[in-house]
Each structure stands twice: as C-alpha cells, then as structure tokens.
Image 1 (cartoon, rainbow, N blue to C red):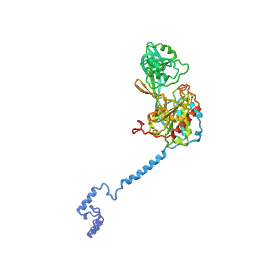
Image 2: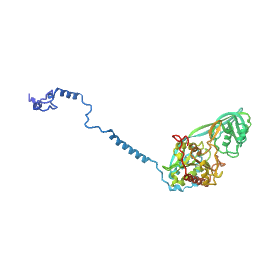
Image 3: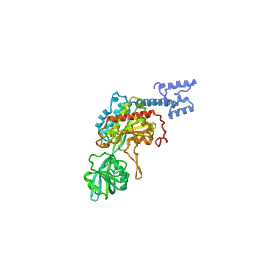
Image 4: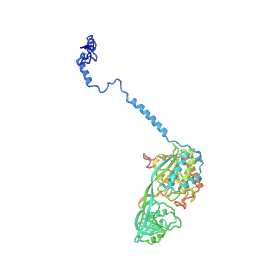
Length: 496
C-alpha cells in the first residue's frame, strides 16, 4: 500500500511524520505551537475558535494617534500663506503716470470731447465720454473706479388737451412725469411771476400761456407753487426754446404747436382736461472716481458729466468735466494727489442721482473731507465767476480771491400742497450737505443756451480760470486748521 507516513491527517492537515515530531516536541515540555491544537487547553482552543469565527474589525493600536492640532496647524499655515499671496497679487496698485498725459490742455481735451455729442445715459456720446475720461485719468496715475448704477430715462408718449368738441395733440415738457387733470382753464402772462399768479388764484385750475421769455421750467415751477394743476404752453417761440427740464411733480405739463394756439386760448374760462403720458426705460449710468491708492479725500473736486438728451452740453457741463480733468492733471505727481479725489458724477440732470449714490457708498471716508468743490457751467461768462460757499468757508474765499463773487443758492426743496419736494435742478454739491460736508460751488450763471440744442460753445480760458480758483481754494482749505466733527450714531449717516 506504500508508506503511510506521508498521508496527511484528515483532522489536522498534517502528515503522520510531522505529527509525531510535534508530539515529541510536546513531550519534551515545549509550548504548543499553532499547528498543535490538540495540545492546547480548552480555554485556549475556545479563544482560538472565537478568533477564527469573530475576527477583530480593526487592528489594535500599536502607537498613540497623531494630535489633531498637528494636522490643522500646517493646513492653516498653508491657507494663510495662500491668502496672503492672493491679496498681494490682487492688491490695488496705482497705474504709472504717463508723461504725455501731463502735456494735455483744456483746449485739446475740448477738441476731443465735443465730438461725442449729447451725453444723456443710454446715448452713444455718454458711453464714449465715460471711456475717454476713464482712460485720461488712468494715464495721469490715478486708480479709477467706475461706480455703475441703473438709471431711468423718461420718454414722452405724447400729450393732449380735451374739451367738448376739441382735441389737441402736443408733447410733454422735458422731464415731466405726466398725469391727467381736469379744471377751469386760465390764461396767464408768458412772463408771469409768483405775485401775478397768486393774484389770479390758480389753485385747482389749469394754466395756458404763449412762449415764455425765460426757461420754461421756471414758469412751470411758479405755476405749481401757485397751486395750479397743470400748464400748457403754446410754442409760438421765434427761436428754439430752452430745453428746461421739469422735475418734482406728477402734474400734466405740456406744450402744443403754434397752429393750435388760437383754438386753445379761446377756451379760457371753460373746463378742459390736460393729459401727458410718459414711459420710463432703463439705462446704465456710472460715476468715475479717480484717486491714488491709499489717498484720503481731504478735498474732493467734482462735476457732472451727463447732459440733457437733446443738448451737446458744452457749458452744461463739459466745462466742469474739463476743469476737473485739468485739476487732476495739475495734481498728478504732487503731494496734492495723495489728499484729493476727482469725481465725475453721472445722471445729475435727472435728479443728482450719481452724487447721491456716491455719498451713500463713501460716507465713511467723507467724514474727514474738508471741502467738496463742485464745478458746473464755468465755460461761458453769463456772469462773473462766483462761489456759493459754506458759511465756514466764506472768509477763506474772500482771502484767496477778494474779487470773486459770492452768491446764495436757491433752496434745494420746496413745499407744494403740504409736501416737501426735491428741486432736482440744483447741482451735485447739494448731495453732500446732509452729510455735513462743507461745499464750494463754482458757477458762472445761466447762459442763453442753457439746456438748448445750441449749447455747443465754451471758452477754454474761462475753464482754466475756474480751475485756478478751485485749486487755490483747495490748497487754502488744506492749509487752514480744521477739526472734524464726529457724526452721531454708529453708521455716521444720521447727523454730524
């Protein structure tokens, strides 16, 4: 049958020879090995069986676990270094000052700017002006922030006058919100003042007149002040009327063509209905804020860059834009550049919207602004250059330029039917007053082409003269002692 010593044991998987040797080893007092289960104690066999049937789910720890902080600390260090590197790479830096930019002149800038045409938001001239001015200021070494915001352009959908047996078509006055009112028609003098209108008792009635000698907005304001519910102007003007912008009321303010004037004037004393319809469409406007990185707005030079839709806006207010660019050019590379901001506001003609947004966004740095200098309509000598100054700065103006005309501003609000309304025809410095910022408003008065299509001419020498005065006033303000008044409240927006 052969040698049975090589036949494995069916119970232990060992050959007879190996089992014999294991038994000999056991008889010599050796410790039972893993292949000698029959020599183990019952408890050992039970443990061995349990180990085979129920293996451990994890290995027993052979050394202490790594402390969590040893893992987190390197990770935090890597993240911190990465964040610092990102901030360093993306930190704001000043663009290089290009020597050629400092060689510019007011006359040269005007040659470029006048090509763009009207600059109302949404017009091509508006977009081109923004791009050109931003590139100009960047070349002077300023970091320019474009503060974009949504604007609204009001479009005229037509106006009409209705009476029994009569319907006349017309247009809504520029900027008016429109509305519909019915009342007795009263004819007023084209140049009627407040006293005359009060004497005619316009309260709750509708007014009609022929071509006013001055801005139409002035007469419309007077009619509203007198309690009138609407105004119709017969456009029989010998020359194009001023493009006065009407704001602050939702009453029907309209114009009808000269051919319908006689029919409308004949209805004086009768009840008629005025209706003016407008539609608003969205547009994008943007303030341009030019400042050196790390600079403080100890003084702020500003001007609005937009115009009314139908006017090229040479004096109103390309002249102010050119003056601010000239001031930025003079300050470039000097200590004044580190203490001044240069801001071109947008959407001023629709209600100081750009300057109001700027004041809300930058209220904290403006707490330490010593003066805001606003330049508006400084390129035509309608009147001698004047300054409307904060009461604390009037003596400084007299000291810097004794011959300069000081004038008082009209109020920025009016009371109508028991409501306080903003008069949006004022200029951008008005937005800084509620914050307590002292203002200096440089202005040469209203010229005959104010808000007209004929506003195409300005004198670069007058613009440079306004920049001279603004620079002198700014340097005097910076040299004068001044203690900022801390605002009350946490945000500093409530009072000062």
